[in-house]
Length: 218
Figure 1 (cartoon, rainbow, N blue to C red):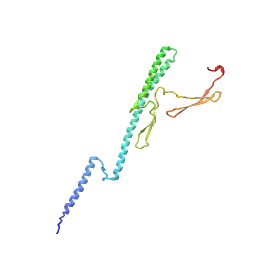
Figure 2: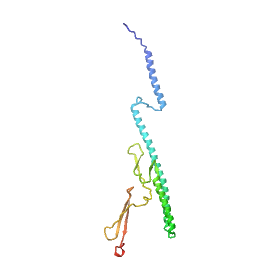
Figure 3: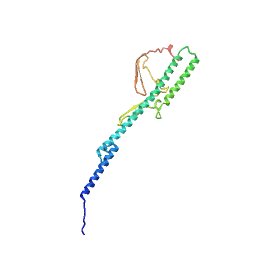
Figure 4: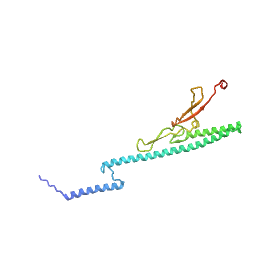
C-alpha cells in the first residue's frame, strides 16, 4: 500500500518565522510593560540572579534607612523629655537656694519643700512615662539597644540612655575613702560611672584630722 505525503515547505517556513516573530513581540511587550530587560530566567539566568540579589540588598537598605529614622525619632523624644527634666532640676535648684536663706521661716521652708517634692514627682513621671514604641527610654532600662542601619549584619550602632529618675540624677550611689595610716596626707579618689564606665579621678585631696580624746565623738 502506497502513502503520499504532501509538504508545503514555504508554508512551514512562514509558520516558523511567524512563531519567532510572535515570541519576540511578546518579549518586547513584556519589557515595555514592566520596564525591565530581564523578567524571567529564560531572558538571562545570570542577569536575573544578579538582579534579584541587588533587589534584596536594596530592600534591606530601604529598611535600614527606616530603622535609622526610628533611632533619630527616639533620640529626639528623649532629648525633648530631658530638656523638660533639666528645666525642673533648675527650678528645684532655685527653690533650694531660696530655702537656704535665713530670711525664710520654718513654715515657708516647709512650703518650699512641698514644691520641691512635687517637682521631684514630675521628674520621676517623665522618667517613667517617656516611651518609644512601648519601651520606656528614660527609666534606666534602655541600655545597649542595637539599631540595624545597614544591609550588612555588622552595620549597627548601640544606644544607651541613663535613668532620669530623681534618685539617679546627680547622685553618687556609693563611695568609700579610707586612709591606711594615722597620718593625714594626700589621697586620690576615683569614681566610675556604672552606665558609661567612664572614670573621674580627683587628685591631691588633702586629708587632715585630729583624733585626740578631746576631739572624739560619742
